[in-house]
Image (cartoon, rainbow over all chains, first blue to last red; front, side):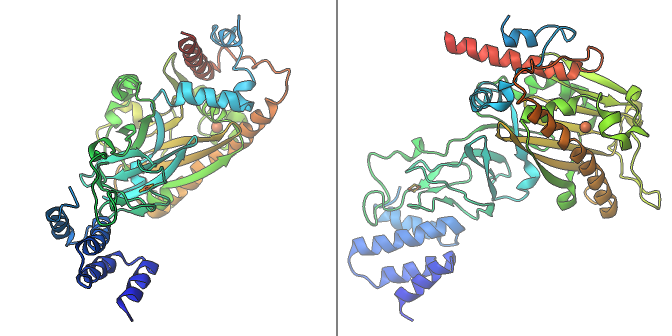
Length: 69
Length: 380
Ligand code: FES
Ligand SMILES: [Fe+2]
């Protein structure tokens, strides 16, 4: 299954913790900063919702990239 | 004299509230704005959201709200509307693990109401925008107060503090102010009644109907064993001198609340806290009924029963619930019948028994007073 398919399936199953992982993986597969930011924001948002262990890490990452307060 | 002045005369002279208070949308709306949203009204009970993160949406007279137990274990009430494009935030009872994420564009709020993230607001991958100040976009919190497990709300944020408004009942029941343990699934039920919410209040605070509508209660709770509780401008109800504890076939009873005075050995009291909460207290259990007005001719009655200990006998609990359910169901035909009767265009609000109907008149007087006050304020 491609990463894209895995993400769609996780959305379908509302598996939010998995989405946090998959969107981070997606961020690693792109090269442009804006594309990375987009996926990291997706990961961060679901991390906030489920209070994921990586929420602080993701937030710091986004803040350091200048895209989160 | 206008209609409301007729209501506000002495009980021996007064008429009841006129028909339009029961059968028109315009009066339903006026009462909503003048008395329900301006006072401390009952919304739900804390036991409905027992754990941190539990959230439940509610529709309160058309207003979408949700209740939630925040990370500090405090119960809060919010308007259930996202500050972005107004999407409903909580669509069914659920557990909020971290943030409340709006299902539309995923703005995220903490359980304390702060807007914590606004994904992609400044374009893809950019969560900030210089024009958007998150601190000004918190969830709209509704003023609330918890007493006897009931979540009371003052929607218009203009009532005097709860403890002041309810002071005399709080004082009256001080010794009963103890831990209340909700009876769980066998400690609650709902009734849907085709009648105006006020008819349920009226019927609750008088004992005049007991021998006719609740003949079963009559054997141990005769009319002369009841007294009125009437405080004009505030609340009304009734008390009983002959409360008998329920027992099972082994003679087992519910445990008592602690250190009660002699009065409660056989005493019970039932008070309507205007506008919409009906409370009952006894030595060994208590209940709260929250009336949710659905329309001018429809009301939901949510009943919650409480005990002095968390682990009371399940069979006894079931028996107690069934007994109260039977009593409250016996009242349904009266409320529905009075609703139907108010389509009689020549009905003048009716008269009151000066001896027996003071608690009912007390409620009518309060409604008339608050509605007139609202009308005067709107004129000026
Ligand atoms: S409406 Fe809630 S995020 Fe857009
Ligand atoms: Fe009754």
